[in-house]
Length: 284
Image 1 (cartoon, rainbow, N blue to C red):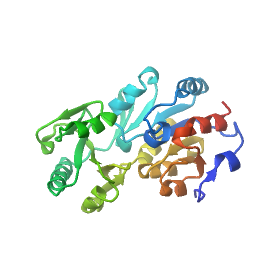
Image 2 (tube, helix red, strand yellow; image 1 turned 180 degrees about the vertical axis):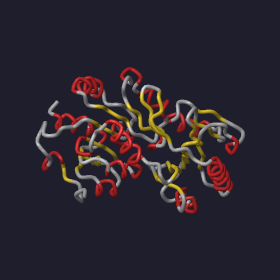
Image 3 (tube, rainbow, N blue to C red; image 1 turned 90 degrees about the vertical axis):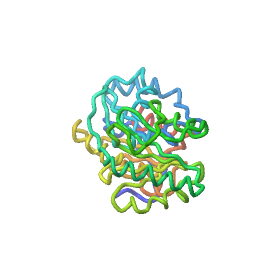
């Protein structure tokens, strides 16, 4: 069982170079990226060294596969992308796994968002398909948020008529999603995953879909054990992923529930916490 609270790696963690790590998995926003959404420059030489050592690096994010693939375009060969909160896993353009949402549920969610908007909630829905993301709301403020995470997106007239394999429905709330939008989705929580994945985002997926399920499937396929896996996360959509690795790290800036679930505590996302921790544990 994970220790609680998480131990500070810098004071109580294991010695440098003490672990046989074969897989490093990291969330993006609030974890690898700083608060300005920037990838730390030191990641690129570190990825080269990890590849040389035979260690696989895998981004695991609520972000779209196309977005992740673009961010890592120069180093994407052989990299596994755990996209859309684990509902879509891709390596070298080939799907390894997916968890497709019932179109009727996606349509019901779209109608629920329309009712919230009619009641005065400043929220919009993103129906996430394998080929693209789809939105009805077309104002620039909302689309600016969508573009951060969905490189491939289209504005459509009717989200209930999307012709794609839908893997997730994401809701962006300009207010605090945990207090406004998430409670309005209570009836979906009885049958589906309703996850607050950030201050303003709520994701709805099949019950079987999460980053942890995707990671365990990847471990089985690659013959990598939890003891050989290092995972970093900061928010509630990372909880199951932390459970799939012996080397689980919450960022210092993480949600309290994440800190209590992880075995160790890494420095914050603004202090290059992922890179510093990987360098220490692997003796880079």
